[in-house]
Structure formats: structure tokens, C-alpha cells
Picture 1: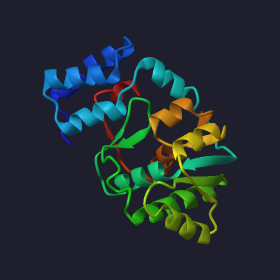
Picture 2: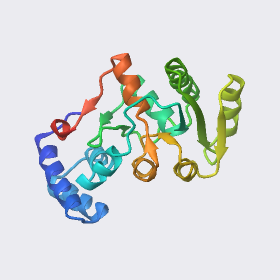
Picture 3: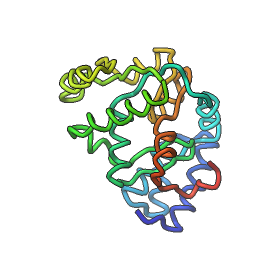
Length: 210
């Protein structure tokens, strides 16, 4: 995805509106119309741009050390890692977390299993214990959970994974902004995995501010 000069201007205006407390939806629609943003450009701003106060709140929860244990937002972490591997449109957002623009297009992929195995092995090598939480409302979640359990992993399926992850009061591995904003503490497992692997991730017009 080529980042047009107009997108940089759109980012500045959108960021200004968010910092002023405007509705995210209203601000995004206005900016999209003014700069004639494409669907992907609009999604990039929606997924990756936040107010300064929101960013500060999330970054204050990021643990700098290797935690003893974490709870993993399974689908978000697995799908995003798949998107990274396949070189989809994935960005380091303005809060420092990695997100894709695929809208969950790989959600039903059998390879989510492989992605979670890679993440699990990475965590085990770091000596971090973990539980993977999967949303039972997503097709084949039960089957995925059973396969992962057969590999000796601690997996739980719940009706609302985002809510359960938030209320767990555990250190959370996710890239969902709502979860990060409301979690007790967060661990950027994807960021660490990418840094270890040497994979490259796109950055947006906010890159100098990360």
C-alpha cells in the first residue's frame, strides 16, 4: 500500500480532531471526504490512529520486563501474525502495536493454528507461561482449541473473548485497542517476536512519533 502525501495531511487533521475530543466516526468521515481517501487508507487511520491521551493510557500499561505469565487474545494475535508472515498490509500503529487491515480475512484459516503454535513456542523459549483465550462464537473455535490442547497448551473458549481477557486482571497479549485500553497490563508479544525474527513492518505518517 503506497502512502500518499495526502494521507499524511489526513492523518494530521484526523489526529487533531481526536485530540480535541471529536467523535472518531464523525471525524473519520469528514477527513475521508476531504482527502478522498480509499477504503484502505480510511481503515488505516481507523485502526492505527488514536488521541494522545489514549496512547499515553495504553503505553502506561505496557510491561517492560518479561512477565511470568500472560493471557493471550488468541484470534487477534494469531491472525495478525499470519498477516505478517504473508506480508499483508500490516502496520506499526501510533500506539506502537502492530495491526493489520485485513478485517479478519484470515479468521477462518486453518493456519491460525500454526500461527498460535509459533507464538506459543516463542513464549515457552522465553520461559513465559500462558493461557490462550478463543472466542467460541467464531466458527471451528472448539476444534482449534482441542487441537491446541492436544499439543499440551492451556486453551479456553469463551463467548466474549475480549471481555474475559479484560476482566481477567492478568497481563494481556493482544493488539485490539479496546482490550489494551481497558486491560490491567499488557505485553507486546508480537512486537517482541517481530524484533527477534527480523521481519519488517510498515509504518505510517506517524512513524517519527512512535
